[in-house]
Image (cartoon, rainbow, N blue to C red; front, top):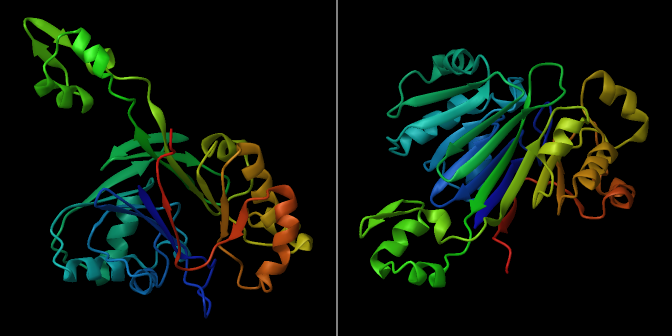
Length: 303
């Protein structure tokens, strides 16, 4: 099961009821954070989420509303007696950016590890997460992230018995290990069925619509996408500043055949958010407005 919590949904500047951009996922005891806008640690407290288990922090890009909350969050993690390393992922220049911000948080009781992205697409395996980072279309280098929780195929008892394998080695094969038995080598694929459908969450903010987003969020269980503007007359502004509208996000969700979309990263000028939702749902019916603290538990599909 993957827990997802949208911590902050404001763009550019925090609002009375919205913190700046941040998302946290939790799986198998490990927490992953995407973006860390101002107030992220407060948003976590309001959502009842501890910063201590955060093992991975991904950054879409280095505009202030996506990273300015990092020094305070690191200090809170340090004060919670964390000692394990934290891995940070982001566009090239990440280590320099983080070290500059750490002028006000110079000493931490845990090490930082950096993975800097410079390709159009990169794959990262960490703590049970399969992360795909892909470039989007903003006015500076910016990445979207798709998080997959893979699910192995079913173990075939009949196949294992057919090979004469004792029960004692079944678990090793189920966990991907190769085993030796009576002078023969047995690999997992000999007793495991094809991979089953896993869990997929895709997160994209600060971009114009593009095919690269659609291709990387295909069939996501949850697609969290920026909706900077809802007013149709602001399309020209969205194009100028490399953002997107509610309707453009909905069109991508439709093309990618995702299960559900949450809109986020709202402009400070946007009011009456809900009044625009009926028009959005005419494009993609399963569209919802993101709210600070909005949560969902995603589980593997029943078979």
